[in-house]
Image (cartoon, rainbow over all chains, first blue to last red; front, top):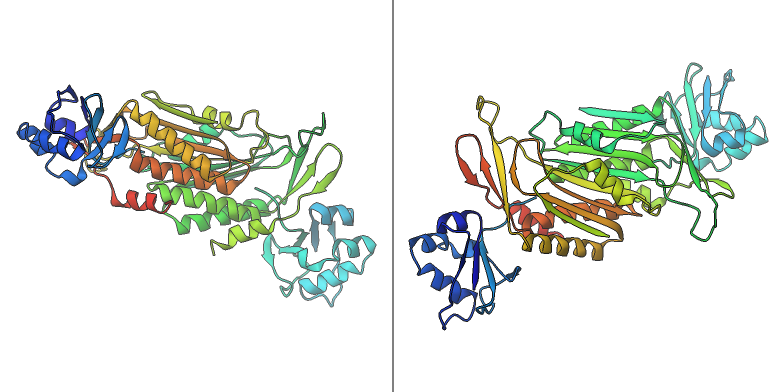
Length: 83
Length: 83
Length: 153
Length: 153
């Protein structure tokens, strides 16, 4: 799975992009966030306020119950501030 | 008094501008329109539908009860269609 | 802060809009509306060339446009405001009018632009004479324009 | 009919707006909104130079902007529609974004512009990092932007 991080989530985690092998028990976005938060203080800190973390799977906005699979591109980012 | 006519009111009257000496009994815009309409078929035709005739005295929109005096610039025109 | 131009000549939208924020870094947004001459000769009219001639009331036009602009400046927090309106003979695709406003806030810029064009259409002394290539006729005022203006009162 | 550009470079508003009606004489009006970088270092901050860096999500950005534009085209009778959004480091006064739409009807052009900028502010994956000359901070999303978007739903 390809993971992308943007803005302060990227800054807190310390990388903008990484390739991860999904543990077998990860079925949806919520599972993925829980697992990521367990990977270290940088992840836990970045994902602490879970409700401000926006998620896109394959470049579409999704909710926490959206399924994820190993070939997906999953992006995590704070609320957008363009325009 | 300086009279100005625009758009189809100008076209129907046949001139765009004229200087007139006001008869003494003309006190307001309504009087002026009545008097003008009596000056000939071209005026009568142009001012027939009185409610569509817009009037400006000294370049400000006014109603038919607005006073007029000899030094005024009075303009008659149809509803505007700019923009 | 308020600029009003009534002119026969065309205008340069890029330069005009740039001037609305030039040197003022408190401006967060510039909204604009440009009105264009539509082709009155339909696609079936062969080589009929339509045109539009705008007549206006020199002196009163400038006063009315300035009054409309001042009213917009009272209603919204605007940094600068521009109205350019052309007169004379224009061809399909030609620019007729530009209204634009600069503000720290996008809502103020966009709403004031809508207000300016609505008011201008019912208050500014301009009259359009359409020529569809066969006959000339004076454009009639639209009730929908009066309605559009009423929503601001 | 729909043009979306995501780019580092500045753009030429005059040329972009002219292109929205070029060759289409059924267009009666072109509305636009240009967003600019405001100066975050206040007038009392001496020679502090503020700047803003826009980060985005390449690929998803273009898709989201196209989806927003398509939604506008479904809601209003538009001839053409344009969104340009820049990324990278920008200085006060620099253009960030241009949304513009061309229509036979002024209401459609103006309202769709307001819709485009409101939606873009809550849906397009851009993030602003402000630097006021002393410290950097990520701009927080505004509740007022969410509210502005809600009025279209």
